[in-house]
Amino acid sequence: MTRLLNEILATDALTVVFQPVVEMIGEQLQLHMLECLTRGPSDTNAGRADVMFEYVRRKRVEPVVDRACILVGLHAAAQLPGNPHFSFNTHASTLGRDPDFPAALVAMADDVGIDPSRITIEIIEHSHGWDGVTFDRALRSLRSFGARIALDDVGLGHSNYQMMIDTHPQYLKIDRYFVHGAHADLDRRAVLDSIAQLGLKLGARVVAEGVEETRDLMPLTDAGIDLAQGYLFAKPLTAPELIASGWLQPIPAAPIEAKARPFAACPA
Amino acid sequence: MRLAFPAFARKKGRSSLRPNTNLMENGVAHILIVDDEETILFAMGQYIMAQGCTVDTARELEEAQALLSNIRYHLVVADLRLSGIHGSEGLDLVAMVRECCPSTRVIVLTAYGSAEVQQEALHRGADAVLHKSMPLAEVAETAIKLLGCAA
Image 1 (tube, rainbow over the protein chains, first blue to last red):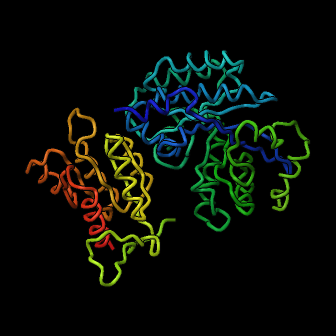
Image 2 (image 1 turned 120 degrees about the vertical axis):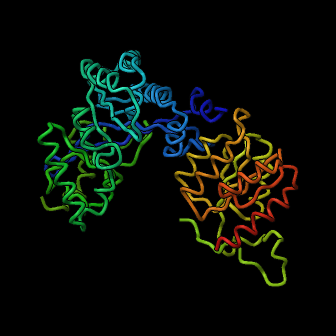
Image 3 (image 1 turned 60 degrees about the vertical axis):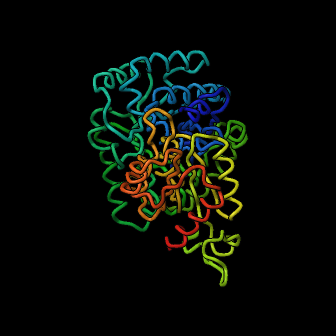
């Protein structure tokens, strides 16, 4: 029985939202890239992203669903003005089990006119058990097309030191667990500092996920982390919402100035 | 978040076995129903919701597992057979519930009431094994009894 899977993969069943990753330059905020997120059909259990991807992993159909999500994501992304950079979540097991994935990604991107150099593959993983050789080859192939690699949920589960070495990421995305409440928590600040240092030494830029409060910005700037994502800046937005938000306009656009205010309130 | 138990406070003078229609006064029980037959999901879902509970439904083992690993339920009502292939996915579900949320109650429904299957389900930690031909009202009674003593 794979009824839910069929519903997820049905034409037009997946919806796409984009969450801005912002770069904090002094008191200015600038769009760095858009994380492309996919939701299943809202009238099914797959309407909750966490339930949908847990289901997909249990069914061991990550390669099929990752491709479907990227396909609809790329089509939605192609409608946005201003040539922004996009990131797409991909299971490590997809890269390790689907040798055709990199070529398929590039073909899909080509179809909608997005250059692979505007794409970052965000590696998510919850289990081991893929083919290391295929995985390495996929990463090399993605890089050769100009795509970048990000390691998602750093600090949790399988996003560990081993993955940092195996994937040579250009981005380390720190899980919200370490970000939320960091202003009042020395342990969390210690973890943020150490990941920032690792980023410097590995040559990866560090992104703080789940930034919800102005006061949690200070530990980030203290650690030298200048990329952030979270409800403080923008929730995941549909393409029309994103266009209306002003994030896609080149700086110094008025809406970006307005959004800079919470950051400005925070001493440098 | 969701309200904690005891959700099923009983009114004085009322039989403890009768479905309590005033659950919303005290809290909401969150229930997962797992069956591969749409009609059963619908009928049982409607019936249980009418008792004042909130209901999620799943038609496959993996769908139920994905829900269970993200949401805490007070009660799971699972059909023993979900695919017709190896035919006892309900037992896997019982084991998973016992492991991930020990306070969740589990009712297994089966159309094949063999004593071995019943024993196996209870052994794995099901709180009750009921025959599928049982009227919904009786399933609900068992559910309410179990939820009452989950407090």
